[in-house]
Image 1 (cartoon, rainbow, N blue to C red):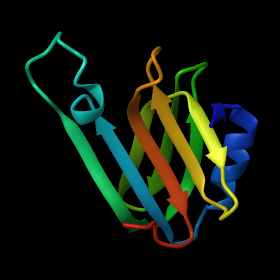
Image 2 (cartoon, one colour; image 1 turned 90 degrees about the horizontal axis):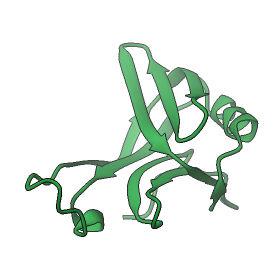
Image 3 (cartoon, rainbow, N blue to C red; image 1 turned 45 degrees about the vertical axis):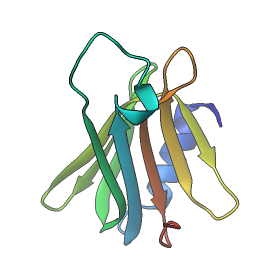
Length: 116
């Protein structure tokens, strides 16, 4: 993965506009972040191959970044994003890593389902 380049990510988001896409969204301070001792509570969210259609996609911030996807009846968003990749399958992969490189958030979009 590479550090986020806003205009490249924005162009990739625009590519997925108004299409049925598969979403992977994951946040955690749990399994990937066992090292954290400041909280006794483990939280996380996970969805894989949720099919959505969004009419607006935007990346904001100066780093870490926030991506919002506006759907007909609501929003999907992820914040704390630091890195991205456009892979050979045409998928947009976004991740937020802490200072030590550990994953805290992931948002991925694809025209075909992600492997399980």
